[in-house]
Image (tube, rainbow, N blue to C red; front, side, top):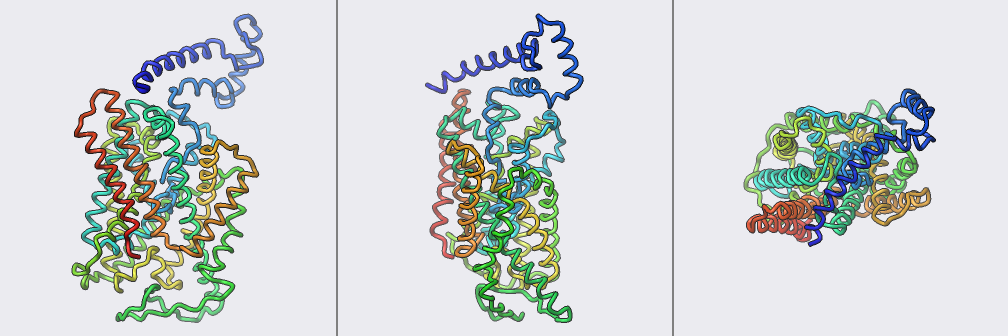
Length: 537
């Protein structure tokens, strides 16, 4: 009953908004100190001078006008909210908090800009934006996921999860076309159609996604920092030393034709899982306390560069190794272990919290479905190429593949060293933005002001938690699959299904078979989460 009554109230608000806009345009109440232009010729002249002297972005009146011209739902979307669990990160996100998603989210929701909001982009740019935003640290873990699931099951899972995520992303665009606006967000749609509890749920799981992103980022920073330092130390010690650049199998010893060098003993003062996370804090923690983090958005291009370099890296290594099938098709894998890959993929294809904003900038709104489909196909091809090529060509036992493929290479391998330096700089510049959005989301959820004291407290908690994970649970694949399965259940499956059912009900188009279909979709997401607890590590 409450939703049925909300429809006429919405039309009244629209009329109110239009009326307010007309009154604002007619007298420009906030244009200057004079509040009544009709009674004062001097005020009329003063108003014309102000308009000539200041740009629209500098006028408080114009700011109010822009707010008034935005539909009522757009006001809800102006609340800071995490939009991805997308900048890329991670590229390098927890599988998919890509850095590009993080950066675009920050610029859209947290950075004060005066850019033209009506600027549209072509379908080609839109497709590339989606591809670039989704790509992330899953490229480092995809081969490990393929190994856990087995190649045949992995190929099927990638296709199925891509189709499901594409469909639910398109659902959000469709619902927004009926009930939202260009400035709308998923949280605003949840509040409008489902109520405040759904909006709160979306915020809670956004916090969880951001928390997972922070932990994965920290582990990657520590890893890249540790091996990069070791690389340059070895270079400075002796330039004449000829190092072994064979592959590594860090977790086990296998009898292969290639020699597997034993890892060197770590110093008590310099260890990957002991002291390196603490040294990382000395570098990263000061960056978290910047009040204005817009400086870090200047490194947006590093996300695209990192993705292309990883593609080249895998292609070159695969070509050098050749195809190593061996007993590939005869290897057996526990069926439940396929959930490792499905959990990762729920986050790898995650773009749902920012998809409305991206597609609203498309100049061809009638081609949104086509452009979104093309982008998802390109993402699927990229993931399949990286994961399958590395898995098929890897010359050692497939069980040696690490959840970070760079760990399978000697630190003296030049291409690997370049990849680590590039990724280290990228992740360090993206991490403050992720921490900022986590802090902002937490403040919104708990109705707290983002004061310096709160900023310091939250930053300390984030760093302590990340250090603990980096020391005692540095497995990014495990963190990604749990984060993906948990957030995917809500953001990828449940909320899009609930929003579409509610939209169809309000429009009188809901059929019983549709309700059953969406219930099965939510159950699939729940099963994906449940299976994560039955996987053998």
